[in-house]
Image (cartoon, rainbow, N blue to C red; front, top):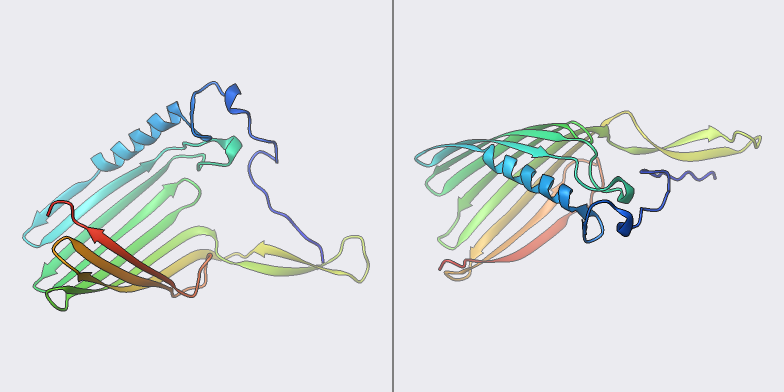
Length: 217
């Protein structure tokens, strides 16, 4: 069986020595100029939010700009600027609340459409039951398939290569869970992520459990 290796970056050349870089580095990858660009991107994302709220209903819009920070020699960063435009809505009625958001990303590594919807219900004064649906569509290969072809130099020998198919990547995940107020300052949160599609790298399920502590009380 013929084996094929996939590589990306600068053709296998070793990263340049940090001491030869014209910029001072933080750790092994992020330079001071790139750190400033990263802080600017975070500030631009925060300044791009617009919130409208009326009673228990809220609508917001957000703009997220990601700049091409990182180092090509270390295979870090996207290499191009990306822009994400998002809309967010939330409605609360009594013990039930619904939340949703959707966004579109252009630039960067690939185009992307993301969406998220959640419903939360206060089952008891101490227990909240939550159901969430997460979705992402990415304009990149969705599956890896095995392709059989004759060996170029050995007669009668078939080779098997792994290659991306022509589909796009579509991921939908269901996340049921709950929150339990253990005390006035501690909250126990637990959920389980269940993929509903087979695109990308997925596990049958991913459990999560955590403790939240409120500092203000």
